[in-house]
Amino acid sequence: MKQFLQRTWFGLTMSLMLIVMNIAAFAQDAGSGAAEVTKTTTTSTSSSDNWYAAPWVWVVGAIVVVLILFALIRGGSSTERSSTTIIKE
Image (cartoon, rainbow, N blue to C red; front, side, top):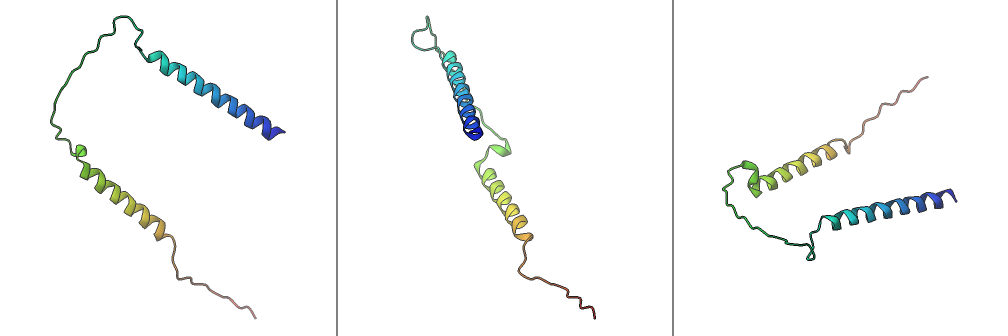
């Protein structure tokens, strides 16, 4: 019964949050019924010389991150196991 009430409370809380976010999103929309909606369009062109703007930099960075993660994951496991047996007489 306790789990049912927790799930119900969680569901109601999440639904309420989604409704509030939906209302906030619609409140920002000017819509077609707004009086005197003016639209302005500006265009600008700029050349980007930043090193991080090139797509190949992101691809290389992602490959390096994957290789580092792979090395960290594989580095902890080994197939060889050594054990020491002590026999007391």
